[in-house]
Length: 160
Image (tube, rainbow, N blue to C red; front, side, top):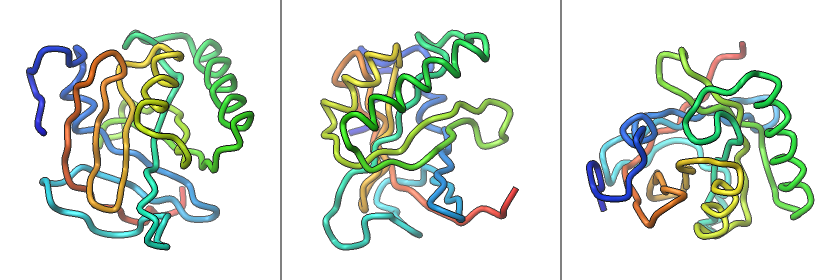
């Protein structure tokens, strides 16, 4: 389902749809970038065939408004505490635009359903969360049922 301009999409929907996410798996960082629907290529962490969804959630810049660094850091710590409290498998992540001019610390988690991921995003004032599966990269609005589905490509990033 492609929902650009559909009722219930957040103001920054197009930015979320084109965002990239870097996830650090141990010593390697993998960038997930949206691609045409039906495309899926590269590393996926749950390669055991389980098809588990990796949700990417942030606590930065609630309500789409730029927050001070200390407020973002405090909110992100609370999100990470909640992820740990729930016993979820997680990895550090950073989401943003492809040029790197806008970046937000995030967390990639396994063990949530879409509704729970949306609820957690909403709890931290977020417009949307990402859902990565072996077959799709989805943007899930936190305040409505809006979803944007695309393909994905994952590539290993050079160490910074």
